[in-house]
Picture: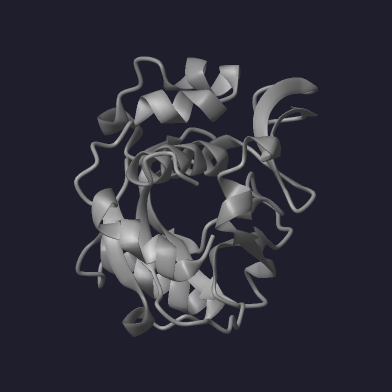
Amino acid sequence: MDFQDFLKFVPNLIPIELPAELAHMKMAPKERLEALKNINLETKNPRIAAVMMLLYPKKDKTHLVLIVRNAYNGVHSSQIAFPGGKYENTDLDFRETALRETHEEIGVSPDKIEVIKDFTPMYIPPSNFLVHPFLGISHEELSFYPDIREVAAIIELPLSVFLSDEIIIEATLSTSYANDVLVPAFNIQNHIVWGATAMILSELRDVLKTGFDNKF
């Protein structure tokens, strides 16, 4: 999708009512839906994080950046994610968390990102995190400088590919809930993207398609 064409539709995105759980459910594993039923976040006292869904031009085409997390001893080892991370007490708000962590993880300065809209917070039971997603836009081509301690690789996903239904699949995976379970997922450049990231991506897709009047 041409970036200048994309920018014409950006004002349409701001007033859109978020589809929230209706979008999340499209890409939620059944076990995740069960885990989220009747959950009381006050008793869970989750850790707080924020992530940036960053759109930007690359060779005049609109792209979305994702990261491949490094392997480590944890539930999100080697998974596909958005740049972002844990809220710090020095952050003014969750938006600042998303901007700060994006700078730390992939080297994009906050002054290059226009934050357009916050999205529905996502609770992740396996890690007990409540994640606040934000949609941001950079109006210039970006160079990425990943933090090698946290980021194994950068994925630059053309928006036209992201909005295509061809990347939606079902995959058999071993999760924190069970082994060899069938889950909805995105096949993004041969990476299987599922769970919380896929659920957040699902809401982003729905909002973008609504804002574009399904023209793309």
